[in-house]
Image 1 (cartoon, helix red, strand yellow):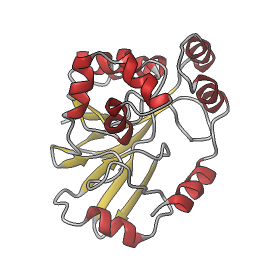
Image 2: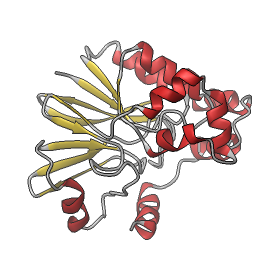
Image 3: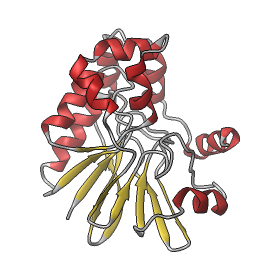
Image 4: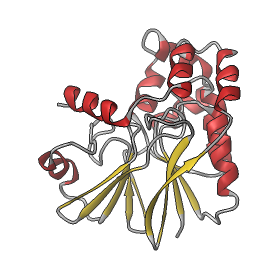
Length: 229
């Protein structure tokens, strides 16, 4: 089975469309939406698009938090979604196993867990305890990396919609019998930024800044480690 893992779309519809266009030429059997699809400028449209292609959904921390409509940005996100979509998000599982690969958001036990390329082995051991699969694909920190701990390969797919890779584009992972591959899809980021600015998303300007001048992956990983518990 050939699976495309699309994590952390963050409502960036132009980035998502670019990846889906590339997938049409890659003979992909399934698409996994690895969580945090809605936390961005075009939440309903991004969710609808992935449901149209019959993606397998797992929940991200933002997908879990948004339907509860807390104040500020989360309240805005919830207001953009129809009731059926909010209910759909409430039903999403923490993980999904396909063809011997386990897909999650933060970790198999916690959609908000921080695992980075510099996390200590012990944190990986704790996070992966009891996992039967030999390959686990996650996201959440928006930086592609791969680690092997106690025979389990953990692959961070990166972020389609808001990457911290030090360069522009959409980042995701492709998995088949040959193993996991980190992928990068270029798209018109300037045009996407202009479109995002037309939205009423409260975080539009901050997101545009990250897209036009992407964060350094090493600095981001170090930051996540500083706040990891």
